[in-house]
Image (cartoon, helix red, strand yellow):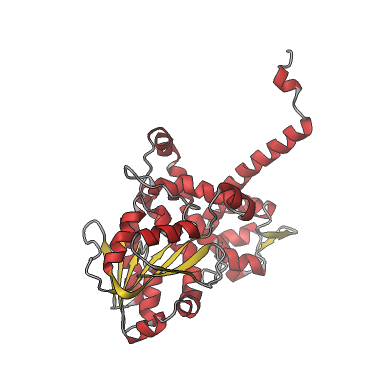
Length: 361
């Protein structure tokens, strides 16, 4: 068979490299699925708590079938996530922190809770590409809410009060004295409950649109025993517009909203004239070129955007569709000023993913 003109111009080495790169993403996808299984089945925790093990020992320790555990271990060792020597498998000290220790800020295993939900939306997303209308976050199922919660909870539990609150001028004093606080897009309530436990004199209200997230919030609140936290479904119990809140939080949610501009106007009506609005959102830049050059996780972030963030932000007609990397600092300042806020400050908080801002009327 004769070659086409295009085929005659192919560089075999470039073709090989391109193929390797392409299948590298398939490798990442299937390994991500097995990270999800390892987290969900407690395999990482079993290795961390019981130490190095053969496949049969780990299967017995975790109550699972040896053949399946063995193949999972082979994948994890080949991916250099688990160490292997002479038929024995182990987690390194670093691996324990990232994959097994849910209380450490480096823990990343919980983020993979989203895998089933994200893969499940691939079919309906094809229609989104045709119509322009995305999917609401609850289309990801309870796994979506759990993944967001577990992805950010380690930092929140470790740094939110001692580092985050301290960076917002005057906030600690108001919370100690007794403040009224709203968390808009509160998710599973992790941040709000953490603040409520640290500042019992204050009153906290979480507003959320995801029923799966609110279900988790109710469970988390019950487990905490805090009595100064209240959760609200915004479609049934919207945020009041009487300027009652001393502080309002929006953590990792504005870029997901279909109409963040309208939400900002609501926040302006809900906050006191001397109040503070504390924003956390994904670090990004004002152009694709800058994001691609300066963010080593840019491809993953744009992928998350299509599967979750931008999809949610276009789930209603006329949605702004900011997407995961669309709410950069200049955009944040522009939109908050348009909503009636005059003071904008980037906070000195070191976080691997988020930028933090304090906005005041």
